[in-house]
Length: 524
Image (cartoon, rainbow, N blue to C red; front, side):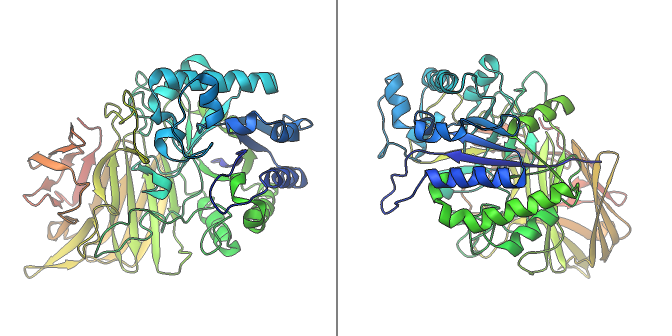
């Protein structure tokens, strides 16, 4: 039986400097501890350095049961930390969320190591042991490598995929669950053990698998600069974790068992939103998750426990699926995210249409921007190699994707379907689209490959990439054959896939051979 795991992760700041915000930062922590005790659940609390240095927060955990409550580090950089090390503080406030000052990417490699050592040593002084779990909205490969080599870290957690939110651009990553990062790019799973950092990274916040990806998209103007949020976070009361019906829908879909390896989500909220804003949603989520645990649907454990289990269970990144076959907005949509150490792909349906909404290649040799460089701006960016980006490549009245079209009397008509089915077999995820003009279309998603098989009339089907030719994030196609594309993105040359069966034509559309298309994502 596949495991379904929830981590209750809350993190603690000691300052809220934003103008107009007067928030009791202690009360959320007190109430979160009460909820854990009431429902007999395990949880993880991560201390930002300013909170770690304040007895007002650390003393709340003097009498905790260490078997049920885990303490770790929330790795954002704050003024008390840089002052202790002797690094000039460049922020506007003692805690500043801008990337160049608030995150490790804003500091040199040596300074990152000093930051880590100071946090670790001070944590040891307060709690008489080193932390084993660390979280942050974003980290970097050098920081994680240093943590791996010097400290025994069980698990890391980072933000969900998002574009522009708070200035943190994390796009094209392992969509949910967990992975072992590459030494060159922490946002990419490693493909080989030689390049693998053996600390699992788990994705936070519980994204809506249907609507979060392209929320706010305007087909005329394209993707907005700052993406809205549809997640399990309880402070979002219009759509998301502050709405009980949405929470019920999310838990049902996320823990349906359609996950291939294991199901996962994170529940919790940072204290800087204040208890009043999070109380209703978080209280309801604790109640529902406690109920599901008693029913045997899922396990609630600390972040560190999940990391240890992950390392015992998987020597390399396991393939995983995040699927939703009902729609919280009742717009007739469904979505299946497949992730492996080689690639991710999103198959998406909307009413009678279906298409590939997103496809990214993972390549351990593609270096992140901040391995050796320092981020000097307010925003940070981590990404992988795009093959299709249905969000950032949309615009000019084009919704980007790879669409199936049916040729009838020289006209290309949109291919429609009647029903989608999902199953798992021998470690593969299999999608079936029935009621199409070519019978049933079967999509088989394997660790390093994807095949599309059609019952009949496959020679009349073209899989055509659609995108705004003026999109700024497009890769440059340098060369193409019937079996391979060669592209350059961010000055990195790559071949996104090889066509093992079928052909590419001059418009880069795919056509089947013997009723099948098969792509390999082992990359070059």
